[in-house]
Structure formats: structure tokens, C-alpha cells
Image (cartoon, rainbow, N blue to C red):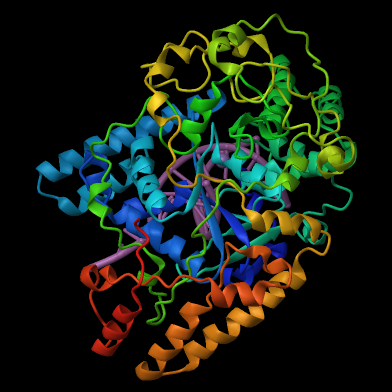
Length: 591
DNA sequence: CTTTCCTCGTCGA
DNA sequence: CGAGGAAAG
Ligand SMILES: [Mn+2]
């Protein structure tokens, strides 16, 4: 649902943007919307669990669009279900079932047109669908992460901790979450509109001068969000006006009570929970390889399971390994998703831009820790002893003791979020697994996964299964999400906003790119292409921030051209193209 | 004027 | 998921 009507009211500060403007940047992608859109072109197969790869094609095309422009994507997947959203989720599930039934009906009646229409409305992006894409992402060395719960929170965490420069999504919730930079409505050309929290004050329709992030969030909750239905007659306009006057939700509620407005007794309590869900929902921390709250690490889930889920080896609902069946991975295992096969919508142009090759996953950005170890304030709500804790005891200890890793820094950096978190109840030590850092007893019940009852819903006992998961333990596979070197260099030049850096890259890359593009004909094109391939934008070596960039780029770049493109895709270009490209093949991404 | 409810489109040959 | 519009406070 998002925040109803929010985006239209922010239209005045939505700035058109093309992803080429993000060259040298790293972005988090709300993969669900891509998968869902992509699945529309094969909705019947998706619904029936039949093997297909169209949705994966769609996603990989988008991925390559980003890579083509020197943008490094991190694909973020939704994970476990949040109890607070289970009602909405059940509703949607019922609607899907209805449409599926209708589709079958129409199909049996020979009305295939109507059938497909219903299939589209019945498509469900299940974890196994996501798993199919993840297999390809592994092959292509694309960063990705499966959120413990909502992708929204995970993406916001990545943005706030500076692990990504922006988030690509369609969901207005990201604004409520406090994401500083969001790209909406990105089309297949890479064109979209950008939201920046930093210019929120310039908005026209609604005046946000004097608004803090906290006030913005509370306004959104007041107007109605996924976690809490709004009071009758309360929409964005009124919520905004009230927040502008009273500055905080509790004062607003007090005023409402005085104003003959019936405020349900549970409303205020739910409001607090909603705030916690926005601000302290669990996310996966790629640095410690464990789940943490937005700011504080927790260990209620065995670390290796947390890691397994995040990298897509384990089903976020069942915590069990995926069954290799209708994952449609085999359909695409021949790997024709390389960047070289990418064809910008407008024209023919295949450039190699192995944006994230030879990623040394062991490179971590300690700068991003700054966003995490921040606070671990004392517990507030007493709450009764947490029984969940011991259940995970057997396996929870070996990883980093509590916040050892997270606390490597002291005091200073806190500034990042401190101002925004005033009044927030910091996460409890070991709290319940309900997605937020609260010990509110009524949520002690099973965490997510209301539907998939393969797992015991009695508390947080996942340890039993962990024997089955051993295999994935030391998987040396591909990269999950992790930061690389560019993070480091970024941190120091952070203040400068890395403008210089991107500018430099832009100039160099742009020039060759456009030069290439401007050349109208194929003979020349081929040559230029070769040159370009050689000194392509080595995004993975964002050390470019420094100055050695130019050299790095032009030297150690591996030329990888995949001839499979021509085998699997219609060859539209002339034959010369093909020949020349083949000559360039020196390596294969598939080791 | 504001909120609420409803339908429709998203992809793509 | 949102956009857009119509209907209802
Ligand atoms: Mn959302």
C-alpha cells in the first residue's frame, strides 16, 4: 500500500534523472518490482510453476542497463513476512487465488485473452521465483541480498550506511523509512525521477520547513501506512497540518483526544510499534554477516542461517535450503546475461563493463560501520524475560560476541543518525523475532512466516534444522552483498560528496562512450568498441576516487566478450561485428 | 477541500 | 505497487 498519495504531493521536488548521472555510484534495487513486472510477460508459467526465464531476462536486462552506465547494482529481495502486514498479505493472497481460479475458468472456456489477464493478477513472486534470479546473479557476480524481512528496511539501511548512493524502487514507503535518495519510475531506458530528502524543504504542495525525519515519519504513520490504519478521516493533508503544529505524534494525539476525536486506546500503542518497525526493523549486515537492527546487532538467529538467507541459499520463510526444481535456473544456466549481450533499447551497442568482476568479497568497508555501532542504548520497556533467547543459544555464540565488531569505534560518528533517533526506544538486548526491536510481549509469538508452517511456530527455535544447513555454511560462492574497496576510499572523501570522483570518471568514460556512440558506422564502431572495452569503467575499482584511477582502468581490465550472445540472441548487426567480437574473447566469466 | 474507494496498468509480440 | 478518477464526508 505504501503511503497513499504521498508521491503526488512531492511532485514538485521530484527531479528527472537518468542513471547515467549515477555513473560510478552504487544503487540498491527493489527487486520485487522488477520480478513482478518481468513476470507479467509469462504470468501463466509463473502461476503454474512452469519453467520460464522471461522474468529473469527482464531483470538481467535492467541489471545490464545499470552496469552499462557504470552503476553497480545491489539487488535486494524481500524476506520473511512481518506479522503486522500479515493481514494485508493474506488479503492479497486471497485476491491472487481468486484471479487464478478465474484464469483457469476462462482458459477452460477457451477465452485465453481473459485468462491471461487474470493470470497477471494472480502472479505471486514467491521465494522460489526469487531464487531463480539469484542463481543467475551468482553466475554473473551481481551483488544481492535477501532481507530478513522487508526489502524497504534493508535498502534504507544500505543507503543510510552509505553502502549505496541511491535506491531504485516504486514504493513511497522508502520516504517514510528515511531513505535519503530514491529513484522512482525508472523505465527501460534508465530514465526516472529522483527524490532527495535534502531538498524536501523546497516542496510546494506541502511545506516541510521545520520538519525532521522523525516528524516526516510520524506524519506518514498518521496518514496511514502498512503497519497502522489511519484514524477515520485522517489523510496526508491533515496529518501534515497536525505535525506542523504539534511537532510530535504524542502531542497530536493528545490534541485529538481533546478535540472530541475518538482515539482508540490501542492506537497509540500501535503507533509506537509502527515507529519501531520503520526505524528498527531487522536488516542484514553484510559486514558482520549477521542480522542486525538498523543500528544494533542482534543474535537471535544463528548467524550462519542469517547468512544463508541473505545470500539466497535458504528460504526466508522456512529457513530450509531451496529445492532445485522449478527454479528455472537451468534454463538460463548457459549464461547469456553478460553485459556484452546487453543492448540499450535505443540502439545497438554492446559494451563490456564488468562493473563488478573480481570482487574481492573480503573487502569490507569499515566506514560503513559508522552507521551501525552507533547506539545500543539501554532497554526501556521492561518486558518479561525473553524465552527466545536460549532457544538459539546453541549456535548463536560463535560469531562476533554481541557488538564486538560493531563497536569498534567509539563515540564520534554517531552524528549520522543521532539527531533523527531522538525518542526512539533502542532495541532490546535480545528481543523477539518479530522484525522490530521491541520486547512487547504480545508479539512474542512466532516471528514471520505465518503461512509456511513447515517450521515450528513456537518461538525462535531454528537450531534444530541447522544440521541440514551445514553444507551452505562455508559456501564460497559468489558475492552476496558486501562492500568493496570503493567504500573505503569513499569514506575519506565522503565530505566532498565524491563529486570530484564521479566527475572524473564521467569525463573519461563518457568521452569514450559517446564518442563511440556518435560514430555512426559499424566498421568504426568495432574499433571503438575494442578500445572501450579495454578501458571500460572499472566500477569495482572505485579507488578511482584516488587518482590512480586512470591507469588502473586502462590496464588490468580483463576483456571478456561472450560469444553466446550471438548464439542466443538474434544477430542484428552485420557479420563484421560478430567476427570482431569473437576475436576479443579471451576469457569467460564462468570459471 | 479532503478522504475513501474503485479500476486499471505494469510486459510485450 | 502507483495513477487517476469518481464518489462520499
Ligand atoms: Mn513497502
